[in-house]
Length: 186
Image (tube, one colour):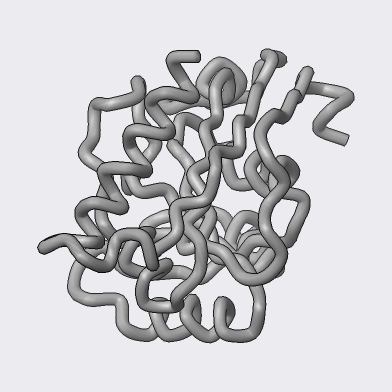
């Protein structure tokens, strides 16, 4: 249905089979749906709990779609256990390392959670670059506008290749940032 409204294009390799952590940049309310369509699999997203409580429809829809609510304050042990269980069962977990929707790429430092989750579960970290979604329903927008959206799936970041450094999670996060930046610039 989205392709009827948005000229939506995808590029990059197909995801490897099996569990994966999907980590995308975050410009728009539409990003979870667009990323899931691009990777062609069901993805359970970690979603901050402050999104909930404003709309029963939104709350029910995101819960039905498998979102895992988590808090920004404190250590979200319960949600992390759910995410690890999803990966152990062969599923995919998605998150947005910037932590919030941003106005422009690079305005926020990437958080280390995606790399931590991939390393802890021993699964690939898949960088996914989304461009154009900010024009459809970006930060500050109150309605959806028609705009072309492109999603580039980058090569997987394999945790095993980052085991010898002093900060493998930091190195994986830096590599995610580099790959997303290159994809958005290209």
